Amino acid sequence: MVNSRATMNRAEEILERVRARTSPRQIKAHRRRVAGFFRRLKYAVFSVLAVAFVGGMIGSFVTPLGIWGFFLMLVTMAVAFFAILGWPSGPDPTPQQIARTELPLLPHQTERWLEAQRSALPAPAQHLADQIGIKLEAMTPQFARLDPREPVANELRKLVAEELPELVEGYKRVPEAMRREARNGGGSPDKHLIEGLRVVDEELLRMSEQLASSDLDKLATQGRYLELKYRGEDGETR
Image (cartoon, rainbow, N blue to C red; front, side, top):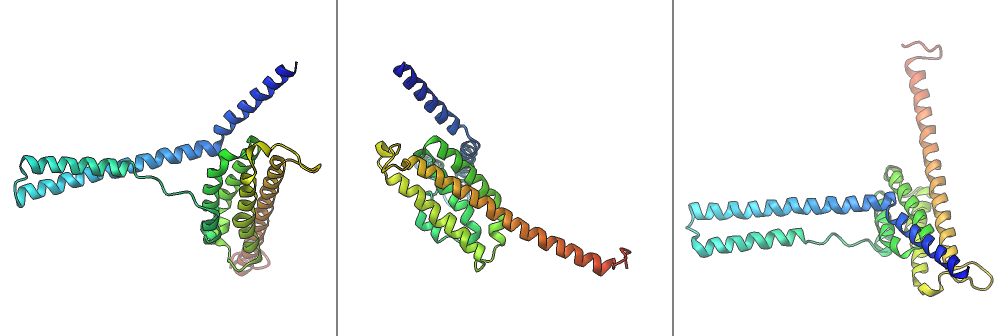
């Protein structure tokens, strides 16, 4: 019975991992990697055509290439093609880089960093990380419109660029074998991480609604101003 229960728990854990790998965030990340590959492939093909064009121009107007010149051109084309195709993508941002990121770019940088940490998190935390990533993506226009001197901008920066990375990095420093063990009558590191991510997720939602509410109030005020200016109190257009 114990072995059967352990088998069921193991099966549920494997199922959660499979679900986590097929989450919308992971699908989007896979599509981004595929798009990056085809973008590099396009540049690689352009580089081959450019080398061929330059070689043709030299052979036609400067000096005949000859067999060795033609061979050198082929080697140059091959080196350019595979060098560009195999060029690694930019490194994932670090918490230190995120802390220095300008406010409009902060959601994208944090989202990229969080996506890179995903594999080190337990399945429930991965789901919360996905939700946070989706909220950050949706809030990008709100970040871009914020004045960095506003209190809400400071709150968002502290939450996204300081407290969230500290939470995840602190969890990663705990040895893997100890992450599920409760200590001193409290919760386990896994539980603390999940609760912390849930708080971050809820705070992002609250701040997004706060910013949206402010925008709606401004829109209503502007609409009312235009109505009074061009239609007057009686509602007729002047």
